[in-house]
Each structure stands twice: as C-alpha cells, then as structure tokens.
Image 1: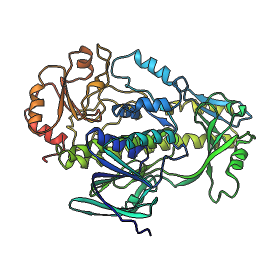
Image 2: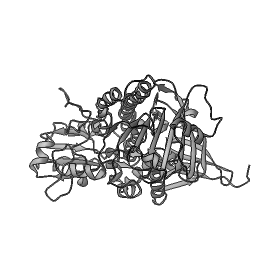
Image 3: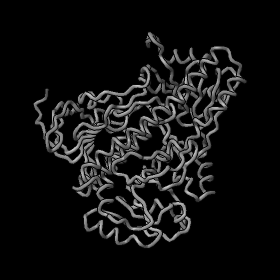
Image 4: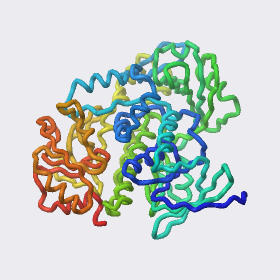
Length: 533
C-alpha cells in the first residue's frame, strides 16, 4: 500500500457510481443547489454500449436538467424509426415487423393535439456508453459536483449523523474516508454497497447468462430485412443497430452448461446461420439477465437507485429508464431535506413510490421476454411463418406502450394527498391526461407556444386557474417552503387540469389538488413535504 497521505472528506451526499443514474442524481441535486461527491471505480465511461433507448418520460426529466438537446445530438437522427424485425434467419424472408415511428413522426403527431395526451418529449435512441459520457462530463463540469474517477467503495458504517465510507483511489493506491449525510448506491446490478448492507432481492425466475459482441460491419446481409432497430432471430440472436450505419451489437443467451470456450464472434456467426464480414470487434461483454428487485431501497441513511435496486433484461428498455426515474425522485427529495424545507418522512416516500414502479416494469419486461421465447419456440416447433406472423400481430402493443412510460402513479405514497373514489382509467398505449394526485401532470401548450411544464418551478409549483391561490403560496413561504405561484388564464388548462388549484412537485407529479383553498393548508403542506422539520 502507498504511503501517500489519506484524506477525509465531508459532503452532503455521496454517490457511488458515475453511470447515467449516478450522474443524473448528481445533476438533480445540483439543480436544487446541493453539492455531492460521485465516486466510480472506472476512470471513464464504459466502452460497451449497454442500453440504447431513452423513453419520452425520461427525456422529459432530462429536459428539466438542460441535457436533453445534448443527448439528442449524440444519439440516432430523428428521421430513423425504431422498428422491431422478426426473422427465422438472415437467409429467409421477414416473418413480421413491429412498426415504431421515428422521433420526427412523433413530434408531428404531438403537434396535432393539445389535450394533455401528448408528452413534451419523444423517445431517443442513444448508445448507453454515449449517454454515460454526456452525463458524466456534464456532472464533472458542474461546480457543485465532485467526480472522483478510479475511486472504489470498500465499506461503510452509519451513526446518528449519517454515513462514513471508506474508499480507495486506485490511481494512487491511497485510502480515504468520506463522511456524508446520505449515501446513494448507483453501482450497478452487482452493487458492492447493496452486498455490503446484506440487502437481498425479490427474483422472478432464474438468472441467465448472455454474451454480447459489439462490432462494426458494412456487410449488406445485416440489412437484408430492412433498417430495423432490433432484429430478433429465431436462433436466439438479437441484433441491434447502434448508429444506423455500421455499428452493431449481437447478443445471445448461453444455455445451461454452455461456456465461452469458443470465440464469441464465431458463436454469433454460427447462431446467425450466415457468415458476415466483421470489420472490427469493439468489445465483448458477458452479462447476466435477471428480473430482480431489491427487498428494500433504504437502510438508514443509505439508498439504492438504478440497477443496484432492480435488474431487468434489456428487453423493452425498462432498466435504464426506471433508474433515471429513481434518480430524479430521490434527488429532489434529498435536496429538499438537505436544504431544510422538508421533513424526514419525505425520504420514506422514495421506496414507497419507486419500488412499485420497478415491480410493475419487471412484469412488463417479463411479458415481452415471453413473446421472445414463444417466437423462438414456435420456429423450432415448425410453425409456419404465417402462423407466427399472426401471433406476433397480436403482440404489437408491446412496443406501443406510452401508458407504461408516462402513466405510473404514486397511489400509496405517504406524501401524496390521496382522494376517495375511483381513479381515472389507465391505458397501456396512451397517456390519460389527469391531475389525479400521484400521477404526472398533463403537459399543454399555452397561447404563446410555450408548454405548462416550461413554467414549473425548481421546487413545488401551485398552478392556479382561478386566481385564488396566491395567499396559499405566501403562507408556504412563511414556513420556508418554496412554492412558485403559476397563474394560468387558459380555458384548455382549466379543463384538462380538472381543478382550479393543483400543487405540482419538482418531478412534475401532482401531490394535491382542489377547487378552493383547503380548511387546513398547513396539514396539506405537512403531508407533501414529509412532516414537520
């Protein structure tokens, strides 16, 4: 061990892991004026692309942080679609294609309506490694974020004031201690922090092993079924176009007892059933597929977020998007507590809100995985392509799932003012515009062309279509609770937002609504900010 002098650091929040979730968490904290330290065992972004799809809801959350345009600039051009192609093999005709419109097409569709059923942002295809690089660089450049590359978490202990973590700087082989009020584990599916805390997982089915080959090839055989985003081959190979030019990922399952005793590239070639000319192998990764959600998201002053809290197969893009939602939810709440305007119960709501979302998304991931499995099994069993195409036609809703991405509601959250009576219907394919407490508020264009979301404040916002809400904001200010007053005189907003007074959180979710001032406004405030400070 080096004799270099070890150092002690004190920060409000220590984040372990500088991937997309850790970086967004740091940026969210900075958005609320809270400093953080981010440590990561790697000295830069992953070279392997990992995820490749950011849904529209995640893009809305990134837009709040001012990084959405940069992410789009680094991703696939808006003219390209995101079709799924199903095939028995590259030497045979296409069995079926699931159409998924391009970003440009979605933007055009959204422009035709203004009833709350359209989001403010469409999806974006982008390599996970590029996303990680963009967010990591943005976090590194922020004056409130201290990013330490090559620093590895080893252990922690907790006391009444927070957490003391021990880390080692691999670049100098020096040990350091970091005292933080809170620690957040964003260190992936094999989270060292989670294992140190002994937090188990709720698994849905066995874990399975996969290998992915990231490569460059201009061989035209890879386009023999058109310009698919994802090509599902019946032999078990999933081919993903990473840049719509010559960069690809081929992933395949290693069956029980099968190991990488042969060249993974040769294994991919054999499974594809055709020889393809590979110009360059960029990386090879072996990974574990799982459907697991941590038994708890919190242990004292330590929280889990992203893949440390839940592991999904990449099918459907649920993993990274669920993690980005975790980062924003936890980030604004930690910011509110550190800044002194929220009570301790606000942090209790993190698990109450985000774990049910992860459990739901796990089942949606399993749902699509089952389609994958049945497609391959039907092909092996000799079903005709016409029969398989008919089966797949009944499953096209799997890729048209706006309700999954935008429609989750925090119905059992302790910091949401729940209402009696039946909740509005939830639809798989659509956004149902409603201000029912716990759900995402409807986004609408105003007369000047701006969107309601553009006017929401960094903390709480009281949207008022009646003109009676200003005294409520003043009373909140007297208690030190930051609430922006947003008076909107717009008939469409008044109709779609359903109530004259709607209190919106920093994450654009509604926490209270009414047509007039409540009898006990202090009780409302106490609930939505997590009790007395």
